[in-house]
Length: 432
Image 1 (tube, rainbow, N blue to C red):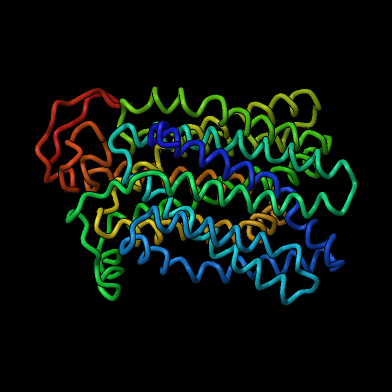
Image 2 (cartoon, rainbow, N blue to C red):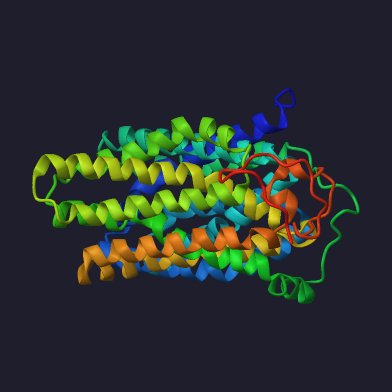
């Protein structure tokens, strides 16, 4: 294993992790329904409650990252989830189910801020964008592979298949933990001294540009959820298309991310991250407007063409926004309190993810067109505000090649101007 490079070990860990997750995610509800006999509605309620409880661990995750390093929290989260999955076969009723699902939920909550912090520790500059792109690409492939493995196991029709899947997922998390654990801790000694817990989150609260960046992600996070929440209902009930089209559209998005994320991100690293992320938001806006317009079309062929075109637009927006926005946020967070900052930012994903099923379904029931227009306005507003926020963000976060790797995170209006390069909207104008 030591012969593999740091990035190779990291990516192998992400593939193993995603394969294990892909094995279980498609049958998470069905598993407990099968082994306990509880109704699906009750299983779903228990899982949702446990997931919301898991959010309580979010502030603790930030403190642990800043005190013990991101690698320790990533590995700990994997071990916690592995322990939870290993006890799934012992669950026979509601209370034990809630306990083990809550354990896994705490591990899930720790993943995003800790893995983003870990990436920020092992790579810098545009290499961070490229590694995030590779992660998104390979994780999509791993999720698909895991789903195929689960499908093959369940095709056998035996109870042991369900148990084999959850034990296999536990083993995958342990293997991913071992791979990440083998990567040397790269935080330089003395560069990021631990911050006292009582003071750490006050520093986050005082970082207004970062808080604005966090709030701007909320409408976009709701936008990301439409593919799994709103779109299946909209195209089958409002546009009267076949149920099978849902799977085709989801596969189109997943395969598109897996195949194109790396080359597109490599192409876009020459531009300012704020502009790329904002342009991704604009493409999301165009996709939502396209879906809204399809409500006025009655002919079947134009509807099918339009649905695929809008889904491709959505996928392009995700390709432009996903890895770039993650790199922007990780680079904006100060090193000493990066864990706390990213834990706060994670709430801008976790809360919309929890609320999206109820909120988007209610909007879709009230007015399908109105839902798409509201989403379009939300992501467009976020994109425009992100451009206005750009001068307040650290120079190396906006344009990673404009500062040396060791430069402190200083706002762009306070940083000495480096050699300008063309941006997505033309040459960079002088700062006031």
